[in-house]
Image (cartoon, rainbow, N blue to C red):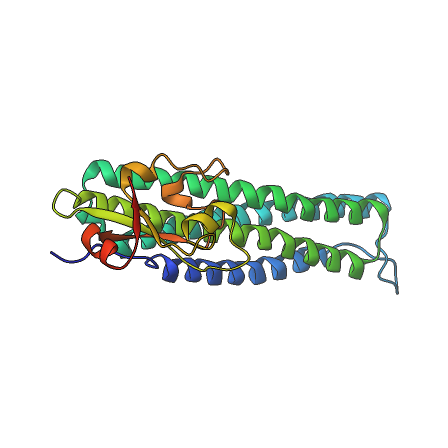
Length: 265
């Protein structure tokens, strides 16, 4: 029998998702700058005017900013997460290879993660809205407004990038565990905690990666389900928590013991 899928299967889709997100950020930034350029300014100056006509224009611009953030921002991010997370799952095993109940479970995970990422971006994008609202109601310098919106957009996408990366990696981890579980009756499998060992490790990760005591550790699936990372997140999917750099690598128990892993069960 072929060896179960190992760690790192979601790395390609996760990196692709971040590239998708960066392309979206550049596209959305250009669109917002184009929209803001329609704001009326004082003749010969870059200061926004505040008469009635200008305020009507400002209201129209604000609606366009809202539409861009929602349609191009939130909806495109939803599509990126859904597509790349499913790629991470299919990298472990093609869709038709999954039993229907497992596929439904994985799809539910993707749906939840897609909603969570969209919420993260929505909250962060509030800062963009606030910057636009402040600029169009106080008659600020147009150049300052564009710079402020660009800065806030960068912050929004920084938060969204972390959420997208975490969501895609979580889908891949869950798929690895699910695939390994499906063949567990044929092979006595355990799961090694793998990834970087350094000063950035969370306490949970420092323990299971062996940074505390130098001991390589692996767990049975049943034991994994009892673990608590202190983050309120599923250890199967998120390991040490949100945006964790670690993953579970399934190994035959005999091989794990031969490699010096201590197995917890």
